[in-house]
Length: 438
Ligand code: SF4
Image (cartoon, rainbow, N blue to C red; front, side, top):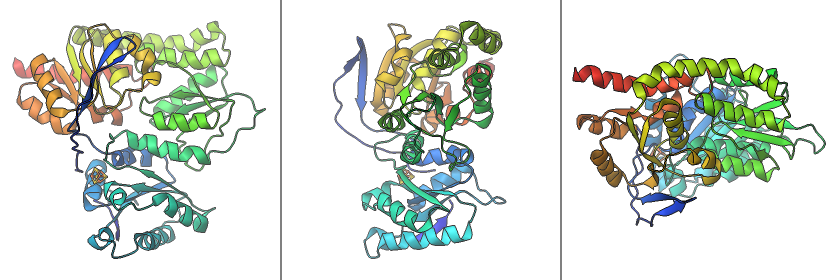
């Protein structure tokens, strides 16, 4: 294993038999199983390492994994990076050396050189999974040596059967078991779950404080060692729709989910804040005083963009798992027409409220079969298609306007103040198309 090489990753391509269509609460869901064109879960390291400032992500993978990280994150020349790849060489893959010994050597050297690391994530990849390298065992063994100075955890970012936002889900799920216990007699606490840009997180914390909800934790915390407590008095709000595994881990520790729309747009954000306000007994007049101004600002800002977007037809190819709540926002608040909403995984419980809002003609698909999905886009010819990076250029070459799904994950799009920026991400490609057509 040659360590600490910091270097576009491989999109996963799997072919399986297509299962039959299913129904979701009366709505037919097209089930797709076939070739997929998505980034893998390692991609999440790009935003997670910026969020958790005392954490380091060590991918145990191949040169391809290193290339993915390097090209997605850019090369950091002046700063000490907080992610790296321990590259598995042929002799590791051939079983000629003990990969666990090699990993110990790499981790010990890394932690010696970098005393600023307080939490180390060992991140599994396709190659480490193929040779069945047990990173949970490695994390346990190395943790026993380096605790309390460094906490060592593991999760998988592999591209086998996953999509890129699952990397965050797996990472946060790995943190849940080490969150301190909230005593059973402690007052109720709110937990915001999902990585948000600091500026957005601060806006939400301010709103909760103004409503008198003081005990609010966030997962992930900016400092990975400052984990919030958790127990049966924890009520959590999902900020992202792709955190199914994390939600299950939280519930195993007694936390209860507050059901709401996801906080995109004026309506989604209001619903999300309202769920917490109701649970924590916030008086309606106070709620309106705190939330009203931001909601009104968002509504006015969106009304300007509505004239550009209303009536425009949009399709989502399955990619980020943000598809369903974003489609609801574009339909309800901007008057866009949803042609197809494809998502890699449909979490029926977490998305139930969102799905209720869809009109009867919206085609909903779950899973991926890139060729069939592209054929439908060509037949539908929507005004704009939200898709993965690799599909955007070929579709543009066919005269279709696209939006990169990954940009939606990298941009601050949650909350009242970002609602117009979110709408603008869809309006801009359409304006560009109109200018080129003139
Ligand atoms: S984890 Fe798998 S899909 Fe991701 S870059 Fe590495 S080899 Fe490619």
